[in-house]
Length: 517
Ligand code: ADP
Image: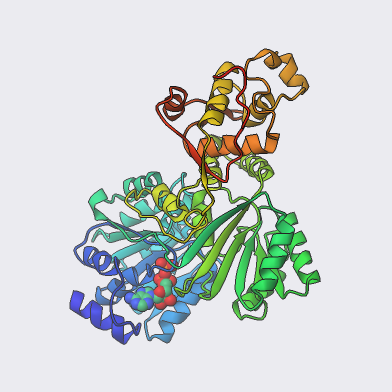
């Protein structure tokens, strides 16, 4: 079967050889093992189910949440001479009927359906009697509450598998799977862990960087003008910011489009088309833009505001450089964005998800403060601890001198402990810099020996030091109704003098305070 798969790869898709992971995924499907295929965006997941669909008898069902992509995929398959069809809310009743009839008479090799179809008993009844060798679950993270795009209908997929007497093989595909999400997918879709195919999350052509504390408007203007021939996406967290960045770029004479959920459908569509057809170079958008966008020559993805978590970040940033050419992924970090994201998380419909979302947000903040390789940080986050440093991200090329900040770190830790490990970052920074804020005085923190111990730095510098310490696991955050910081094991080692802390380009307190901690 693998031989015919290879032939099909050349004859129908025009590729010489399989990419890493594709052959393994296809083989496992042929062997009838439910499998999960975790590959980065652009890694080539579609082939993993399209080729088995052609080789195996019957109709493969592909569950996909991306209505816009469904049509593109089906069009591409039809153009390659492969009988494919889709059923989603864009079809009217007669079109659905007609497609189902084609499926029932065995004329369709790949049927794409939106997950919401599974809610309909009537629809499922129509499928009974169809021979289905394989069910491909695209964007499989949608099945998990831990994923960044949970779709309740995805939970019905396991029920659909019971509909067919031949017990179809299930192939789950996703680009963003933390260990927790992967576990969920495997449990719900009955996939054994050994049948996980996970290939290189590294995107060596992407250069990651984080820019902190700079005038963002100016940065974006200068960057876009300097790269005016290149296509890029600028993501913002709110519609309002999308509008204002877009206006700013237009005023600068830059050809830009915008995209967010508050715009009328036709405007969104036309902006998207103009971007895809290279009529404009820059797309300014919220995270509503991009799922299923196949544009290979995106040279930069700038996050104007902090993304809500690493999963979304890597997926959005990963839209750069799908053609393999060098591309940049930049986060512009400002601490007030953490508040914006917290606010957005608090607005979420399901309160039980809030604590988990806050933990994920913290990982994103850590990313913005780490001095380790950024690519490696991402790969570690997704559960692959073997990743090497990339050698070209913002951290890897940061050649500022590393200074010993052990003393300052000890002062912060000591202050956190004296404050009872019950307060947040802002309050801690205020105590350390000797603020006369009412709350500081009410709690009598001005009487602590650590009060004002870092007053030679401003509160922003001290806040940055605290963020840095969190990213290094010298401090930890307890997520409650408001986040508080405490000293974990790593921090205790520093307090006990067992560990030295180095930081690049750090502000170091020269004057050693009288009350050495
Ligand atoms: P994903 O779904 O993982 O984001 P796609 O399936 O859309 O990725 O594939 C990304 C790109 O890679 C597409 O343009 C596809 O045609 C191409 N591609 C996939 N497999 C191969 C291969 N074996 N050789 C060359 N190109 C491939």
